[in-house]
Amino acid sequence: FWQHCLDRFSKELTPQQFNTWIKPLKAEGDEEGVRLLAPNRFVQQWVKDKFLSRIQQLAETQLGRPVNIEVVLGQPEVRPASAAAESKAFAPAKPAREGHSGLNPAFNFANFVTGKANQLARAAAMQVAENPGSAYNPLFVYGGVGLGKTHLIQAIGNLVLEHNRHAKISYIHAERYVSDVVRAYQHKSFNDFKRYYHSLDLLLIDDIQFFAGKSRTQEEFFYAFNALIEAQKQVIITCDTYPKEMQGIEDRLVSRFGWGLTVAIEPPELEMRVAILLKKAEGETIALGEDVAFFIAKQIQSNVRELEGALKRVVAYSRFTGQPITVDLAKEALKDLLAVQTRQISIENIQKTVADYYKIKVAEMYSKKRSRVVARPRQMAMALAKELTQLSLPDIGDAFGGRDHTTVLHACRRIEELRNQDPTLSRDFAVLMQTLRG
Ligand code: ADP
Ligand code: MG
Image (tube, rainbow, N blue to C red; front, side, top):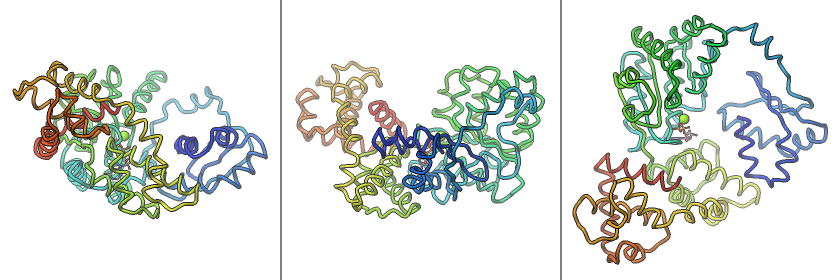
C-alpha cells in the first residue's frame, strides 16, 4: 500500500514537497497497523499535521478497511537475514492461517461492475465460488492488464472464505510463487513447499505468464496442480493471454489449463466505464456527476486501472483547489495525460500498426483495392484513427488515399457493429488499441 501512496503523492504534490516530506518516510506494517518511520522530529510533526489524513484515506481505499497509521521517529527494524533464514527454513508464501490467505477483502463481487466485457468471466467466477472444486477446474481467466482479473479472482477467494472460514486458501502472484520455489531450492525444503501447496482447498495463481521459461517452477506447479485437481480442490489461474498463445510454458501445463473453463475479460465499453467510475465514486463518497463520468470514460479507454487513476487525479485536483468536480475541472486535471495520449498517435502510426497486424502492406491502406483482405483492415484503421486522433472525417479520408468522409463514417459504423457481433474482431480492435496506446 505504501508504494501506492508514494505514487499518489508524487502526482498530487510538487516534487519538492514530495521529496522533503514523503519520500524520506519508511513504512513498516503488520496486522495491527502501519508505522511510518520519519527520519527526524520535524518531518514527523509535519507529516502528522499535513498529510496523515490523506495517507489514512489512501490506505483505506487501497486496503478496503480501516487502518491504524502512526508516524513515529526511527529507522526501519533491520532483521539479520541469516538468523531469520535459519529459524525458518521455509516460510510459505502465506501461511494457511485464517485471515492470512493473501486475499485483499477490498476485492469483492459487490464492487465488481458487470458488463458485456466481463459477463461470462463473472458468471463463471460466481459458479466456482459457489461450488469450489466441482464447477470448473481449473478456472482460467485471461485478459489485458488492468481489466479486473485480480479483482475477480480475489472476489472468488473472499466469497469462498466467507462461506467457509476454515478453507485453506492461498492467493499468490506468480512471481511470488517463483521466488518460493527458489527459496525451497536454497533451503532444500521442497517437502515443506509441497506440504503447503498440495494441502490447499483453493489455490489462486495470478499472472501465470511469469512462469515463462522457469522450468523448475513449472515442474513444481505441475505437481501441485495435479495433486489439487485430483483431490477436487479448486485451482484458479489468470494470465495475460489465451493458454495456447502462452510463450515459454510447457505443453503439459498449457493443455491442463484447458481442462476446466477458460474465460476472457475484454476491455470495457463506454457505458461500462461510466458505471465503473460511478461505482468507485459511490464507494468513496465522491460527488461525481454523470457528465463528468462520461467525460473521463470517453478520454480513458485503455483499461480500468487507468480509469481509476484518472478519477483519483480529478478528485485530488478538486481537493487541492477546493473546487467541485465538473467537466472543466476534469479537463484541467487530466490535461497532461490527454496531451500525451493524443500527441503520440499519428495516423501513419495507426496505418502501419494495423497493416503489420493484418500482415498487409501499408500502401494497401490508401490503395483502391476493395478485396476484403485489405478492406477490413482499412476500415479498422479508419475507425481507430477516429477514436485515437483529433482528425475530422474528411482529414481521415484524405489520409486513406483521398476517400470521401462518408466512406470513413461508414467504416467507423461497420467496425462498431462488428465489434458487437464478432469476438475475433472485437479482440483485434482491443489489441490494436492497446498497442497504439502503448
Ligand atoms: P488486472 O489484474 O486484470 O490487471 P485488476 O484486477 O488489478 O486488473 O484491476 C485494476 C483495477 O481496476 C482494480 O482497482 C480493480 O478493482 C478495478 N476494476 C477492474 N475491473 C473492474 C470492474 N469490472 N468493476 C470495478 N472495478 C474494476
Ligand atoms: Mg492483476
